Length: 184
Image (cartoon, rainbow, N blue to C red; front, side):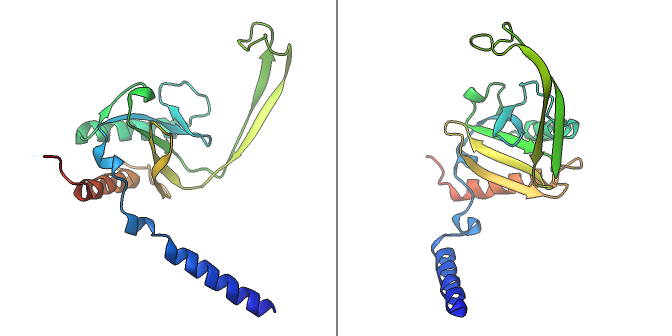
């Protein structure tokens, strides 16, 4: 009985994998070739955070990696970087690999803490733990919907003067440009 179950499960899994095109077969998203304006930022585990948002949980290595990506975009000339994500067509986020991040501090809150209704009054400890991939990552989101359209992950992929993930992204854009018909 157990062997029959595993055989049926294998056939179902094989059929499902055949029905869905692999990312390589589907090709890169056309938005990579069609977009002109991009905003840069970070993925801190809960989506895109603009580079202009001052956040203590952005690692210095992530700031340096984003500056390298910015310099690459400016030198390439393919996209124009905008400051406000609302003006962008694509949102490009970086994240340095990490297994776990632990944070903590002291929370001070009161009637003037900026929350609606003032928030609770008091002082107390706060903390958090975040588990993530050990691989570096570049993600590209469509700005209007916030949906992820491309992701590259690689160990030490954001390290060096010409980071490997940046090279992968440029190659995907080149493929997208070849597959999108030219406008007359």
